[in-house]
Image (cartoon, rainbow, N blue to C red; front, side):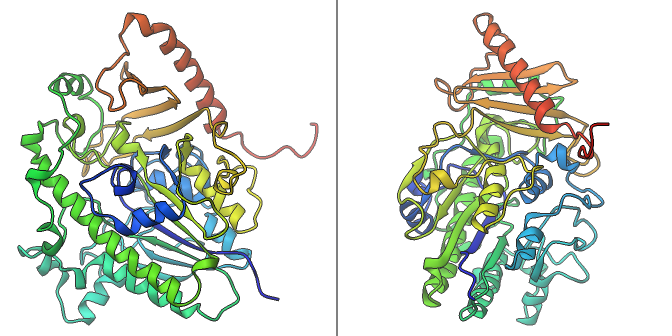
Length: 468
């Protein structure tokens, strides 16, 4: 008997901010495919990752637990915990054929190909980054070499890597092969694509870079007062140094970043066209998201680290399923990527294990809830995430607690914090941490944040099985 559960096309970019989609208010990007996805589905406009760093964020949404609960809070980690299982393992065990294209990054891929875990993927095409750094197991580099090209040599030229040899293109080729191979199958499938862009270095193909003029870019969210604020926070981990937009060349970087997203949009279109051509679109849930954002010069910062500004922790999250999900809905509910995990489980007909900490978005997607009561707050964590020898780490611990109106950031053991009124200061320029008139709300939020941390991130050990 055919399995009627939907296919899942899960497209995850790396380091893409929430404000990079034309239909959601950015007139400077070129994203017709994503714009159409917004028109055809539900866009969650206040979705937050659970860490502003790759591995802890991915560990979190692949298990449905906060990074600290997974015990996987760092980039460059040697291994991944044996428990809990990643959701693709649970979904595969339920009868889905699961495939991965691109990076996984639940553990280090430095100086080695990332080791496989019991991940549930029957189809595995791996590429952590678009470099030819791995002696074996790097499927993208092997694809480039098979076409007679030299990946590293191309990266050194002014032309950079052209679209025909680009990792984003390779990922599309793999996805198209996977989708076409399932044209006549009754078994449902899940395909998880994890491309590297728009992660730094910001080197789009020249054909895309030439389409975006730095002089026409809006530039970062920056005021001179940011230089004073960031000097106060200088002891915190970050991948780059405090600079003005001019010193960062931020307008040009923004143009390159938008060029990378334009290429993603074009390649994503090819995959969606294949779904249509193979007659699988109506029974496929499309999910588009990213693992975390990018500072892009905001507040004098570039790249990522221990901060919780909107550009870093707020990410795109779009769902579409023709005839099943609402269309053209822009939902401003507070949402965590953990909720995406629970939603995927429910879409696949599975009950979430009690350890999962997300809340399914299906009531919103199907029109049974307006999202107003979905979450009262969202959290994000940074626990010693960057390596001190390679990426600017110094042992910083930070947490974000964000309610509908306020965002509280605490940097533990540093005697530092930030408080922003997101209703009146959406780009976080006016820190209210020391404001006399905001001490009461600060104290209240600190208590709430501590309660949330204890309840949500404490590992209680094994389950009870008897009264004593």
